[in-house]
Structures are given as C-alpha cells and as structure tokens.
Image 1 (tube, one colour):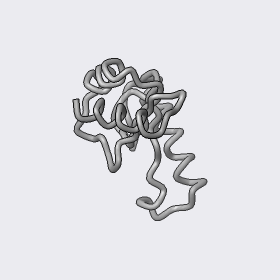
Image 2: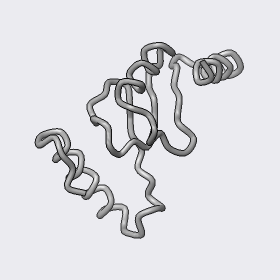
Image 3: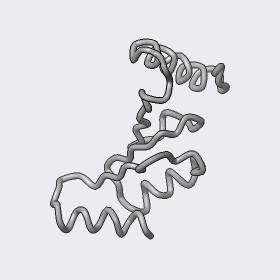
Length: 96
C-alpha cells in the first residue's frame, strides 16, 4: 500500500506516461513472489532495485548495480555481474 501510494503521488504531481518505482537503497528482503505481486498490484511499467539473488528474468524488473561498493573498475564489475546472471539463469546457482 505504501509503495502504491508513493507511485500515485508521483503520478499526480509529476504526470508521466509510465508508472515506475525504484527502491531507494536495496530490496534484499523481498522474495521473488513478493516482487511480482508488487509489480502487478501497483500496475508498474518498470521497477528498479538492487536484488542480487532473484531471477533476473522477472518482467518489468530491472536490477541496478551499485558501482561504488565493489572497489573495482566498472568494466570488471559489469563482467562479473554478467557471469553471475548467466550462471543463475542457465545453471540455477550462483558462483559469486
């Protein structure tokens, strides 16, 4: 209800063609089922979060990468994240 109220407020005061929501810090305590329910119940067009352990193929969910927490170059972080996503998607486990 709180997220839906927030999205409604933003849409009312800053009209947009899209209903979107971005978790301000992280969404680690949210399960995959809860995330899908949230997207559907709030009728989001896109949702942005920092989930690291959830299926990367959830429709309308776009995980963001916190570049400042790794201490490596952006190129290396992105390469590692692609490998992590690949292993999760095709082997159903994470190497990292």
